[in-house]
Length: 394
Image 1 (tube, rainbow, N blue to C red):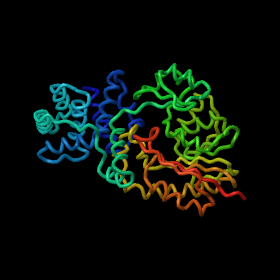
Image 2 (cartoon, helix red, strand yellow; image 1 turned 90 degrees about the horizontal axis):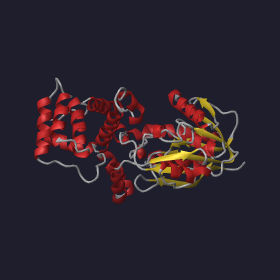
Image 3 (cartoon, helix red, strand yellow; image 1 turned 180 degrees about the vertical axis):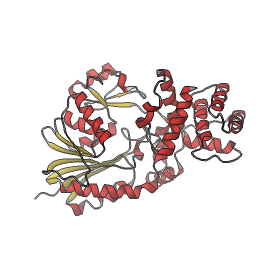
Image 4 (spheres, rainbow, N blue to C red; image 1 turned 60 degrees about the vertical axis):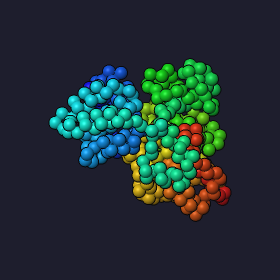
C-alpha cells in the first residue's frame, strides 16, 4: 500500500507541477524498502509511458469526466498501470485503489475498474503519443518514424555509460555484462540502479546517453584544446571532454546542477574550470577555438528515458525556448575565435529549436559545416539536433 500511495503522489507531482522523475523520485520513496522503491518506479514509469491510452480507457469508462489533476485519475492511472502492465491481480488492484481514495470518489473508481475488467479492456501493442506531438512528428518525419517513436516509448531503454578511461573499454564491457558501441562507451540492458554498479563510486563510469556522446565527438580531437562548455550541468559532456584531454571551462547558471557537475568531477578525478553564471550576463576573458552549446530546450527528444517530458512540454512552448536559444547562440558566436568550431545541440526534434535558430548563424559569422537530426527509435539513443559550425578565419 505504501508503495502505491507514493506512486500516486509522485505521479501527481510530475504531471501537475512539471517535475522530472529523476529530480524528485528519491524524495518520494524515503523509508521504503528496495523492493517497494522498485515497484514505485515501475508503476510511475508505466503510467507515464501509457498515459494517453490509460486516460482513453478511464474516460471511456467514466460516467462523468475527471479533471486532469484529480486524485481519482492519478489513482486509476497507477491502478491500471499495475493491472495492465505489471499484471497485478484484479482483487489487489481494486483493494489498493479504493484504500487510496479514502474520503474520495471510491464508488466511481470501483465502477471504472469493474467495467474495464468486465470488458477485458487492454492496451494497444505500443503506446500512443500525445496528439499534439504525434500530429506534429507525423507531418515532419512521416509514419515510419512515428511508429518507431511509439515503439521506443513502450520500451525501457538500455543504460548507456561513459568511461573515464576509454582504453579500458573492452574490460569494462565484460565486467558490466554489456556491450560497447564505441570506445569509451558501454551499454547495459534495462534501467539499472546505477549507484550499485561497479566502477561508479571510484569514478570510472558515469551515465550518458550514446546520442549525447555524439555531440562532443563533433568537436573533433580535443586533446590539449581549450573548450568552452556552455549550459554544461549536470556535466556528462564536461566529463567526456575532460576524459578526452580537453582543458574545459564549464559554465552553467543553476547552482544545484552545477553542484552535481562538481561532484562528478571530484568523483572521477577529472579536471575542469567551473563557473556559476548566467550566460546573458557573463563574459569570458578570452576567445575559444572550440565551444559546445547544449542549449536549454523542450527536451522532447528524451521521451524514451523521460516519458514525463511529453506531458511537461507542448509545442506551444517552442517559441519562447527558441528566443532564448537564438540569444545564447549569438553570445557564443562572439566568444569563438576566428576559424574555431562551435557545436550547437538540443535534445529536441523541432525545427523551431534547430534550423530556425540556426538561420541567423551566417549573420554571426558562422558557416554550417554539418547538420544532423537523430530520431528516437532510429538513432543511437535520445533525439538530438546537432549542428557543427565554423567561424570565418580573420
